[in-house]
Image (cartoon, rainbow, N blue to C red):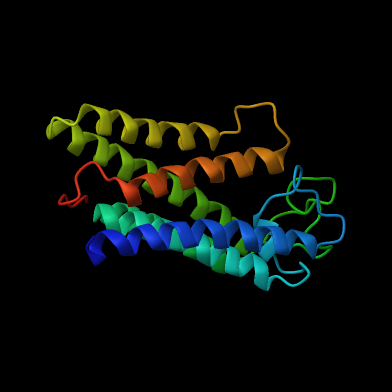
Length: 200
């Protein structure tokens, strides 16, 4: 197996494992933090206890996206990784701590950085969806109908979950959205529709 194939696969797996490990360790440091109710972003917030775990969590999230972009040679997917990195730097403000900061009764009026964070997450999702739709189009042009269908599903499902369509608590809904995106990215890292293609 060439380094071009092995590298993205390893990066994707390390990224996913590292992300959820840091999310778990970060949540354990937050008094009153409820994984079902509270968002992942608050783990890296200004005011969170030991936000380094949350920042490292974001770094692993970016690594997963970069792995998918690397394997698919997708500039659009790489741009989505950059948007996610901006979201990590633009930390939300949780003066009372991570618990209930962005999804509960202690939610505060967002400041400028919080707005940048939210806008960056939206940009990430839009670019992610565009990249997967392009991969679906490329696969269809190459006659790979199964790959095209998989890429189309990978574009649609995370995009739909971003609108919180299910009757779940906010934290669980967000985590489901994250898992869906990571499943797609790992699949791209292991099996892109067309390894020699270059997405815009």
